[in-house]
Image (cartoon, rainbow over all chains, first blue to last red; front, side, top):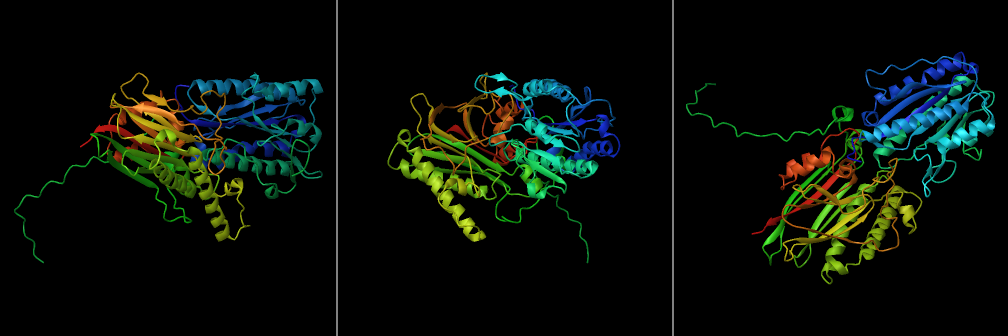
Length: 245
Length: 324
């Protein structure tokens, strides 16, 4: 490490664009990135260190916005469109590839990179076989520090589920699932409006990005979750055991 | 009112080279955008503290030039919170040792600037008391930490009482929710050895760091402790802090330095940007600190602008100098 050019906290926003998301839901999902960008624009301390990437997935996964400073004048925020199927495995594999490439490049360029965070928004169950999506998820998140085996750049994963997303599947994506820095998932309460829930989840993402960035300034690199009491209505937080908070 | 032409020629105003903020690489958006806000809660905590001292052993010829600066970071300026770093320096009763301390209050706690003050002041005080009876190699560092933990816990109890909170017990972890601070101590012998070098005993708790700076050497910056994140794939910033400390005596590192080098103590606001010392920040500070700068220049150098480095910054440096 020749020097510390700047500290960077990378966020990856991963959005399900299967056909079931079409309509109002997709429109609301399309607003998440601009909302995050507007929130960052008001805080010069955070804009100096937070970077965002946008990945969408259906039957395949695509990088719609490579990891960047979203306030860079050259950045154009992409619009999302729906495609067929819901492959979690495709999303996890692309995430691993992107994180590895981005972190490696940033470190080679002299940046000090903090652990990435993934906001994973879905409205359905995976169309992959269980074996397929679980093994892709393990490759993204498993790391044995002692043995040095696995993916050392593993991200913190925060699943967001609306409509037909299965809480029993999503809770297995909460990472880390245990320990002092354990993550959470956010679920739309049954019977709620999915588009409204996505708007509420965007608020949670903004709040988490702002407080995590501020916390980084203060010397802690953990991802900060909003107080369960302050969640937008119609959304519930739960841990990896499926226990509601 | 009548006007008289003044026949005498006015003296020209003396030239003044202003001390300007310095940018190292990309200064980031915050450098231009942040307008400092007051912290209404703590009106008496200054954003900038600067010192310059000449210390020398009355019995010998050599001495040390000291420069110190503590600067509120961009982040605290933007959010309107106080500087939470601190430093202190003191001579032992016999005048032989300089005791210096640098501390970084943990920003997650509201009253950490008080923890940093307790650590630096009470820490130096206790070391000076001990030095009245024992030499530096016999210092009881565990005792220093115990005193500081106890002082910090008392301070937390007082704050809880004044705030009308649930009364605090003696558990340091409870106190640590109100205030906490890292600590770095150096005990420097003003008497030099036969080789003309000063000996320093350095103890670190948390990520506050001590360095030997030898600007003319191939490797200018030599860390006296493990460099943070130098062996990890992604960076982390977890750190030990008073009052929650391990129950084992910290190990003192012994460093020697002579003319042409300096001992520099710093909080991670400077240390993180310095990295392992081989980058732009290391080159800049090494050039600026080849000899002791003026106190205001030293503060401006500590206050450099560099993207994303917005933490409070404190540095205390000593250079061997010919005494009087």
